[in-house]
Length: 339
Image (cartoon, rainbow, N blue to C red; front, side):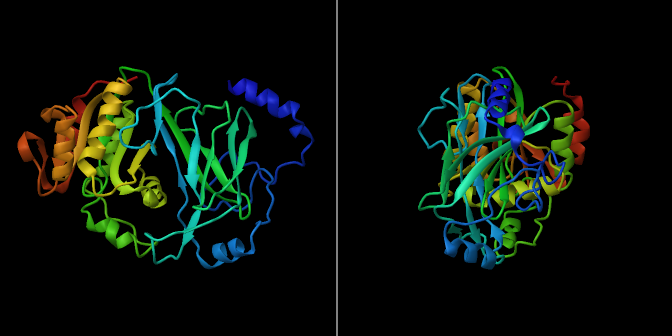
């Protein structure tokens, strides 16, 4: 399929375009500087130019897609009660900005052009364009391109060349995966996120050896799924924190309805187990909602690991001392390679 896309790009005459500005094969989002491909630099609306100048904190959302290689699969925006499908993957997101001191209120970027780009087989490929709607949202679904797992597709706001990354994580039925919550599990407590919301520069503190836990699983070949009850609005901060602190790249599943953590997580776990046929070999959490969600979805207690004040709740396995080091040396080290 990617060969077909490459051929169509060449036939469309892209070989006649001016040479790229840089030799980069990846972008650093949300702001990359010079780009290796050319985009217009004009906003349609004068208000947008003022908005991005005054409100510099990116609140761009970009969807992850998880599932099986030939379907079914689901966007992280899949609504409660809906089932995964095998329809062409749609790349959906939102373009918005806010002040550096306000992470929960975002001003949408209206009626501006968004384009999708990816680097593959030695060249940059344009995958489609659209315009944001009255909520700053966009969706591009008419592309035959399916990216390899963890390979970024960049949604560009053409007017200022800012970007956000879409990812697909498609694993066959029978795949073994590791699931983890974020707040109070990978961070030291839920208050870390509350400190980051009003201060873009604040770096949430990490639970002891949480990065090493995820890295240990990833080095053995286990995909990591980050399942959090954070709202979609906090996707930029979430991906940025995971990346900057060295956590392995993996699907980040966020929610629209923040108050329904347990049923939200249980439903997504059921999609993974039943819809995709994945085997969740370990699940990490800290809250009673994690314990309830894991039990409701049928994750065995002996692979449900709870850290923090509720460690060991309702027969789960306790992670002691707010630190994963001993667990890594004992349990994770004993697990087989997953190749």
